[in-house]
Amino acid sequence: NAGVTQTPKFQVLKTGQSMTLQCAQDMNHNSMYWYRQDPGMGLRLIYYSASEGTTDKGEVPNGYNVSRLNKREFSLRLESAAPSQTSVYFCASIITGAIGEKLFFGSGTQLSVL
Amino acid sequence: AQSVTQPDIHITVSEGASLELRCNYSYGATPYLFWYVQSPGQGLQLLLKYFSGDTLVQGIKGFEAEFKRSQSSFNLRKPSVHWSDAAEYFCAVGAGGNKLVFGAGTILRVKS
Image (cartoon, rainbow over all chains, first blue to last red; front, side, top):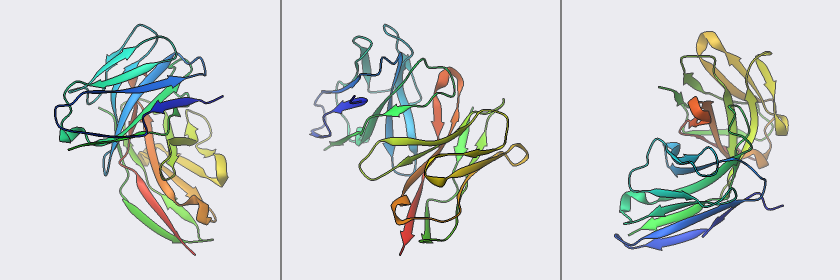
């Protein structure tokens, strides 16, 4: 039982390049989230998907797009990377999305944009 | 809007000493409060959570937290710190749509 799996773990991009961060969970969770973590700012929600087929913006969605491909997978795409998107990205999932449930986090993707 | 403040960016304690990490929140309704811990290079792990009822909640690894509505606080405590507790700790409040709002984090260093 792998939990939440993110790929890649590390990535270096040049400004303007595009890439997709992959996230998959094998716990049959309904809700999935993408957070970014920056020093001194904690985790900020980029996008979330309450259930398969739905996505919504979080606190900092600009410059990102997401796809909830199926119940297991929730990808985050940077169409034209900018240095301000240098960060550590975490995917997380929750059973139903009811408030108070425990978030299960992936181990993170460290992204550097030069 | 919901917000979480962790006033201490870094805290250093000696192994075996007691620990208190501070967390203050702003939320219009009854809050759902959480403490998560992140070890270097790892994702976050839930330590404990508060929904209602007893204001002193027990978590994993010997941690506890006390909800004080009058002070809008949810401080994390541990009576005796171990070197393996060195990590970054995040307080969070449950916002609408089950979107958690996280504090900026407190880095705990443990001296031997």
